[in-house]
Length: 441
Image 1 (cartoon, rainbow, N blue to C red):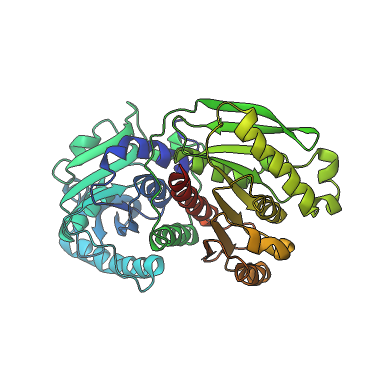
Image 2: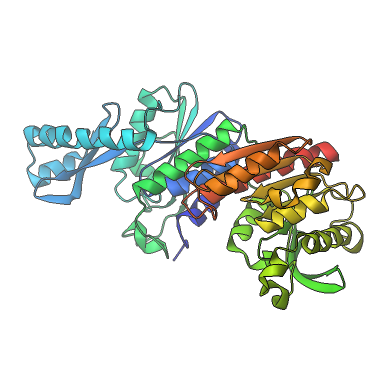
């Protein structure tokens, strides 16, 4: 087993491709399985993400056997050897192509809606799939990219057969493949999780990438060196030693303390995903428990915003004075639900000089009377389906006098469980913290 899932494979592939960052790259995922891989590559390179839709042409009496593939704009690749062995006539090939082109056009509409494909003229097209078997799909994707004016075409896959470069000769200018096992059989055997990718997931990943582009995100490329610090800590706050986990990348630009709604930031899988994105961007993170286990079980304590703010204030001082690895770094807050209210209230303390705040599905309305005192640049991120909280945030935003922005993530509910939506939050947070940490140094 080489990869846990497609996302991990994409992150590892992105590391090999980081030299392309800034070269006018467009990342093109092959739906459906290639898109989660491509999304990680596009995010890491700071590049646009699009799909390049292809359809396999199956032998009529054995559809799983590919005799070729076709692409969106008329591109087509045939495997002459398969056609000869199977006795497939030119008429049968034409009939299969006509049938599949209708489905191909429908899929392209489904994924892009009424948006035009990303322009490729003179750019580097990176064609990404979750792996390569015969290479028919990748070859037709390369042909389509060249037809649309790409100046250079790179095929990038996590795994493929030993002769992958021979298979792509004449189609791609470069082939990047992380692993070429000697006894390669099928792509799926090299993934722990190779579950089918849905159309909805593809659409969500493309939507998240568009949101990043529309917000003008500029997350630094992957390749941040291994952390100087990565381990468990005990944070002195409000008379307690609160357990946490601190990660400080080499040359960190700042540190973000997480404030979770239930008080248990270090165990939150959502916070961990956001923290991992920040760490890749060179931002240190502190995930710690604002509340003790006994306090967390008490609903009233979870809504004790003054208590949450007091704990966060002490944690901020601990980062500045009690931890050598973060001393001197600008501090930001990432808060969720009531934790976001605690973060905003803590930031009203002028002695802390908080550099930036990001609220995910937060409750700024719980500190309505104090919002005008917040001076740290504040980003409010809400899901479009979280209508009640969105209304509360819109009202709270009107009270903020600091630099602020409210971003609505399409299709997301309160917990951002929908595919791609939480990663969109993480990317927005990375850009926001990076921008204001850089300005405060």
